[in-house]
Image (cartoon, rainbow over all chains, first blue to last red):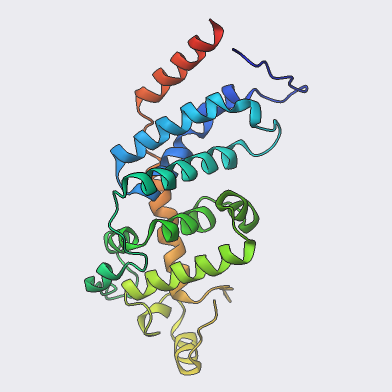
Length: 194
Length: 47
């Protein structure tokens, strides 16, 4: 049965707004699964779940965040059920990956992608939410169902892990995008602030 | 001149690449199956 929404003036029905969020939803799914066909199945399940639960959506709140939440919850519950992924919480199998930064110190994108694939889904998730898709730490915390502090520390651990995988942790080439003088100062003082 | 950097180089480069990972996925065309799915859901609803 249809549950008609009582929409205030100028507020769109989330059913009409949903298609606008599909590219972002799919990008998030691809980031989580690193597999386009799995991502599309996940988006499909998310759309169906969202559609049947629109009565639980508070009109006027962030629809994209709501959809992302459904998607990530679906992803983790599928993962628990099927255990499709090799259990490797710390991404130890990735230890063999050795990627040197380019000569100029800027990492190549293909190398970055390979390292990103080696992260745990939890690390990919937090990095995409706060590092790429523009959500605030508060939004991400709500989506992930954890405290803001947990989001921040998880994001930092994930960035550190990526830096390790990319061998960006020796403090040498990593500052190459800063000018030479600063570089010398920074490496001498061992700057390591997040 | 004096470019402010709130993060050290490594994290800055990581974030730039993260944006690229996400943006590349974002730029892909959304498959037709989703348009069809939405049309089907709407149809079901209006019955």
